[in-house]
Length: 334
Ligand SMILES: NC(=O)c1ccc[n+]([C@@H]2O[C@H](COP(=O)([O-])OP(=O)(O)OC[C@H]3O[C@@H](n4cnc5c(N)ncnc54)[C@H](O)[C@@H]3O)[C@@H](O)[C@H]2O)c1
Image (cartoon, rainbow, N blue to C red; front, side, top):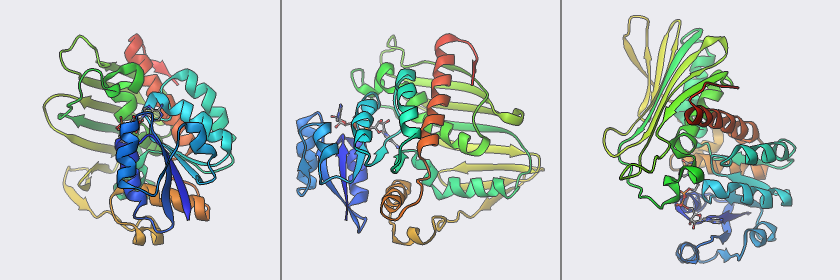
């Protein structure tokens, strides 16, 4: 039985715990949260879980084999330092950390880490993305030309004072939300070469918190990608990624994949829901359930998570470059 200790019993700590409860050979064994009310609510749901009084007590507990860091982004570095000092398996929610200094400190530690490390880029575990990647590798659309990423959230309801609305703590919509698609672009096109961005960066002059970024990114072979992401107070909730090639285009949305031929005719493509292989048969739930089941499987039986050390670092480099461009008004070169 794999014993999992959770640091941060908020939204994601609870979401992962619910999925772990459905995995036969894993259980949540320990929890630490800075807020006693969050801890109490968590053990109210999972009474077998031991309450730890500090991150150090949790990571060093004999009752913890896999450490899950689901605290706010600006707290990831402190959780990672404690977790990696133990040499145990580690899962950290995305993004890896908040600042350039933290990334510079963590990257070498991660690159030499001997045990399983996974980062919460959950979209890597979506059958839709895995199918898209396979189709591109099979040359369905030929040589890649350009891409468009739209990640709009019109129902943002956070208030000032919430850590999500503090650019210094969350990194705003770039590091918190678009980071997922920065990682997916890294997976499809390799690392970016240049990034130019304009963003609100949670400007506190606004009456209510809101954020928006529009960015132009170039990859090798002159692949150009437009990336747009928002936390706004109206408008659609819309997530899509279109990749254009010389033989056609593919669009991935949360409802499926379409292929567009050179004339523009659309064909729906069936997503291979069994893409994870035999493990998938035992998993119920969406990509978050798949993510946790795969990570547990890697720890117990060997293997590599779909989002690990290099994915964590590369998405940070991408996000920080986009933020630097939005902050300075200059193009960031990578
Ligand atoms: N993968 C995804 O799709 C996804 C979705 C949402 C959030 N996230 C990421 O997950 C992380 C947590 O987000 P959330 O929505 O669960 O936030 P949240 O605010 O709901 O929960 C964070 C919890 O951590 C606790 N906490 C604060 N400081 C702490 C510390 N120093 N040590 C331990 N616990 C501490 C808080 O009391 C709270 O209970 C963030 O990094 C966020 O970017 C990922």
